[in-house]
Structures are given as C-alpha cells and as structure tokens.
Image (cartoon, rainbow, N blue to C red; front, side, top):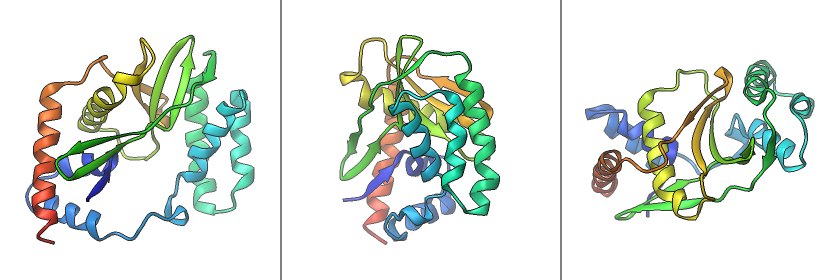
Length: 200
C-alpha cells in the first residue's frame, strides 16, 4: 500500500503531465527513510525538545552545539532566528501532538504535525516549513485541509491547525474546518497516484 507524506501530496498535486508522473515514480522508487539524509531532523527534534522540557527561546541556540555538519551549521541559524522571532513574547507550553492516517483508496497519507503547543492559552497543532523556497499558497491550502479533516475530530476545542514558515517567522492558520473542494481535489489526485503506481 503506497504511503505518502503531506509533502509528497503537495509535490504531486502541484505538478501536471510528465512532471507529475515523474514525481510519482520518484516517490515509489526512493530508498527507505534514513535519518542520515533527513537534513532538518536535528533542528525539528531540537525545537521539540526545548518545548517538551518547558525551556525558553534562548535555549534554541543550543541545537547548534550538537551538530558538526557545515551545511547545517550554515543553514540552521536562520531557522532558529526565525523561530525565535515567531516565539517573541508568546506564552508557550507543550501539548503533545498526534499522527493520523488519511486514507484514499489504497493510498495512506501520514498527517503528522511536529508541534503541539498551547500558545497564549490556545491549543495549536503546527507543521514546520523549514525550506528556503517560498511557501506556496497551494501547499498551505492542501496541508491545512488535510490537517483540518484528519486531526479536527480529536483535537482540543478551539485548536488552531497551522503551518509555520519558520525562516520567515510567519504562521498560517487553518479556517477551523476542511475545505471540501480541496479534499475532493486531493482525492482525485490520489486516485491518479494509485492507478499510475500499479504501472510502475
């Protein structure tokens, strides 16, 4: 059974024609996940660790003391600074998130926010966007629609589903409900993935 991440879904939905087919083939034939090739793993885990222990934003810089990779040492500081700016003077407490699988036919989509936070008393489930490339509206819309649909039923009352563009310190919040048109689009795209997957 094909299992896709939210990022995979966006990469497929945002393409057409041959590039879409190539992306599906790339997803199917890529090697199994390895922490070694997960560039932002240490950063994500470091942010989570600071919140889990109730630390303050000043502790985020300690993430850099645990890495030696020069590319990470060049890239991580901007993300840490962006996260510090977003944090600002907000009162933030850890509120553990959970993962849900959204199923479309034989396709499983993992919906897994990295952060569960109480931000000034309001519960948030947050996906972190850490790349340098501009965060496109389509990615925001698709990810938030899947988060709203999949996580909302068991989420705390008033929970905000959101994507944080970390390097630009910008939080994009969901509307509080899933957009049925976006879900229909995702479902149609996943039907294509399922059909093409079997031919590869």
